[in-house]
Length: 501
Ligand SMILES: [Zn+2]
Image (cartoon, rainbow, N blue to C red; front, side, top):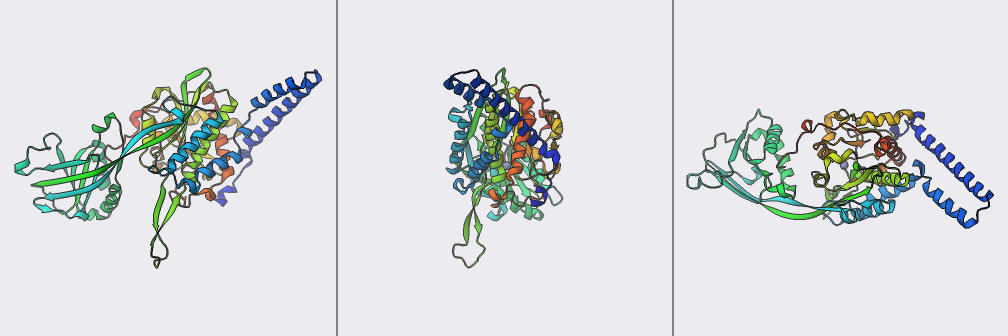
């Protein structure tokens, strides 16, 4: 962190200097006006009214986006009080209340789909309970079994006496993954197809199997909507050297818990292009509290709890959207409607944005600026930012035109192999054609704090974060004032989500 923090260049300091001088000019003209009022002999009460009105209109980026305020916001969101903002806890509701309060304070109004700023939706948590598998009359031991299911109960078999059962209505696909097959790829294909699969996995894949097993054991989360019954399916995996299936019998069931989650959504109605929306977003959920092994084996408890504060991921992004909302509310010249959304359930599958996307007309969204992990300097230096999927629309190019006069730019994602375009909420909107990109400054390849308990407020570089937020305000001003309209993303080029896990 410290090394990159030294890389401040004069170029990068320019916008701040420029904005500061604008403030001075504005303040100078304000004081001149006040003086002339006095000179004209206006009564003091009236001149005070004029002064107040003037003061309200003097909004500059330096007083709408301040280090003090972003520090306050990110510090609270990343505080131990919110216990890591786990989706299935009361703590995340407290975080939502805070964001709603801040949206209200800065002057947003609730979106239609979000009374009191809260957009509620329900998800189901489906956790495997029991599973028995018999192949060719041989029972497969429990430790060699695993399943991912969106169904609560299922029973498959092809033994003679039961051949008329569920198989006819829901055929079971038997898949062999042999020693030479790519297990990950094979499973991904099944996940994309949906349906019911019995997978016989060669013992050479044991190591990968264990990883999938512990992932699937945690259960799946599904958005509850009308289409839920059409989608989904079951993958049952058996680690075995059996390579020919004559008979099989599989029985499984899963426990279901329903939970209500919320996105927080506020808007700033557009002045002349109210039907065109610029969406600013970030996710406010994180990993919560996880038990971890105690360092001292002599300890009786053996386990202690640690809080994943998620200061960078993504309290930083949420603070950004709150303060961008404040900036544009105070500027009070947005021709387009601005929508600010804090998503929940990003860390567990992006359900917040998936639900959100069913409550907006995608064609009405001109662009989505999703902000993810901007709390520490990018590899390009302090205060720099990059975006995912830069070549999928011309948004980046257009933003860079706005930044060019100040020798600033948004860089292209330096980690294309990490698939970051797909690893945040922007992907859901991109699948609907929205120029939806994530803006970040994380050095993901080196970040020691990523998804660790050390991702706390002390690991952030707040002045760098401030610069990024200001830069995003400047870069997106032509979107806000309606002077640029980026090209749409081709939805056919955006990979779909799997149907099962
Ligand atoms: Zn994140």
